[in-house]
Image 1 (tube, rainbow, N blue to C red):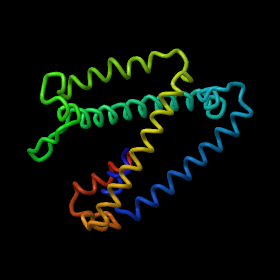
Image 2: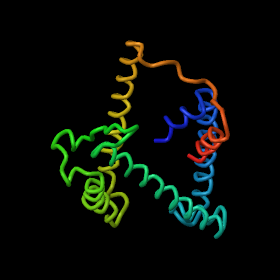
Image 3: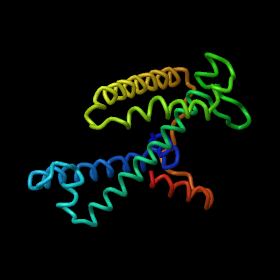
Image 4: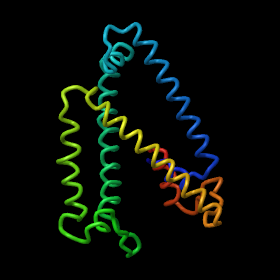
Length: 189
């Protein structure tokens, strides 16, 4: 979700280097998980981390998982709010799907849409006793992600052919201290 913002802040070349670096970290992590899972007494991810890094490593892993999941939930809620109820940008209101279909009502507002989504989508999904119960919804979400990529690629190709998209910046643009801090926050994502 943060990749477009990262490319916007870093530029194309540093972003490609960041992607390569993160892929190397991911490969190293998967290698460690596979190596320690064979020798571990536990088949749980947290148990493997405890065997590999001790109690402190286990606690750090659990804290990182909580922080990561909370951040992703916030990002998803922002995206859901923007898509369903719209957003304001530079004094202009971009209508959301629900506003376009049904008009402006109390139940098409951002807070109502997020409340309904939380109560009728997220709450049932987190109520399953076993994680493997989410396999169908996970497959559905992967399918939606593929559709999203296909639509985005199609729109991009059309815009490129029409000449409405310019060449992306290759390097970051550092004008002042604020632009440096934007660059720094990009690395946090």
